[in-house]
Image (tube, rainbow, N blue to C red; front, side, top):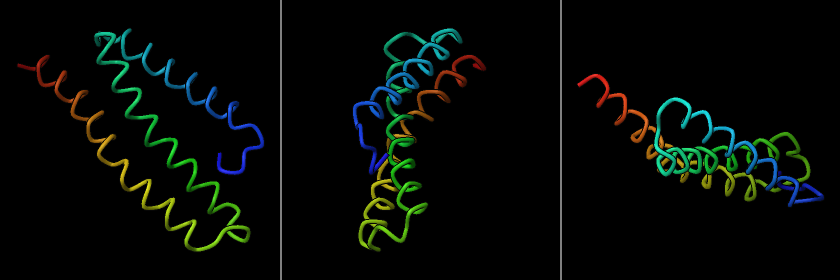
Length: 97
């Protein structure tokens, strides 16, 4: 998270979660590359959500500008989450058709 004393631990944690999500998607029939893309897009959104939550939980130690910047970063990841949704819905639409 934002003030994590060991940022590599946070990276490892997010990478482990990304791998699990990709494995779940592959187990449900998604191709490797597509599963990896979806997982990466989702993790982008989760990472920015985590940053904002950390700032808000410790709002006395962060400026309003820092909080608003984190909010803007989260809102900008909407595109990544939309890509993940489109990939998932695209496959569902193929299955139905």
